[in-house]
Image (tube, rainbow, N blue to C red):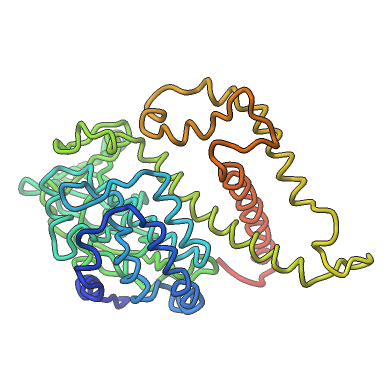
Length: 388
């Protein structure tokens, strides 16, 4: 069984005064100030296969775990674009730390969809609104109805950040109480269990994202009250049992799309880091078999690519503008306005959102870098150089 720190003790590392009274205004700047600390501990984190305690505590002190917690508990309900900016700042220095942070902040959003009584359990405990909640969609456990609640038994793999989590949401299949064979596909539930009641297996030994600490957690016949259960299917279809959040537009957004956006911030941060490293090297290295002593003295291929991307996106602007309907424009008017470059917008003119093209370009770079890395890993595995 892997050892884990006391989450309450971790929270105590950060004085309450540094969190109480803060808002999400300036949260990106607070996270950015921690980049040197994250960078200094990145290699150590990969070797330890988990994020160091002091980094977790420092990030908690920024309020980053409150971004999806309901305001009535002291949470922020932070706009999505601000969340992505904050997670990207972390990923520039350590993708594993970013993955853990965005995962737990994202699962807090799901926790806010549970029955209100369960939310009281999550957000008014020892950690308050700074609670760290992990969870996965890997259905490795089973639950059996019992005494008005359930008993959960089984394993949940890829439990990112489990060493520092207060709670974990296991995805479990409902099994008949009488043990009869299941007719048809089983109902899937998210079952909330305190991390102190779960066993952590020491089985996270991987090549990439090693510091995420995505070990397997095991539940052994643990009783769970009925209010700590959330049906997965209805939730993904838009129904949740929370009455307090039922009419709040913030909690009506599609969960899977939100996780796509949160996960993209890690790739975006990696892309920024790769571009920074690349642009730094081209001023120090020449080009083989040419007269160029500095790569940056050659034709600016990166600039040309950005120019082509801007031209292509300018052509598509009208199609994007015509899609201004549904919940997304109502929830994120700033993002929709940024996409609308206007009929007079040209490649050389200033855009309404000056960083939009840069962010989209970085996303493209991140995709290319990730794809190349994936193919390289497959090749190494095939040659027996490394293993997954």
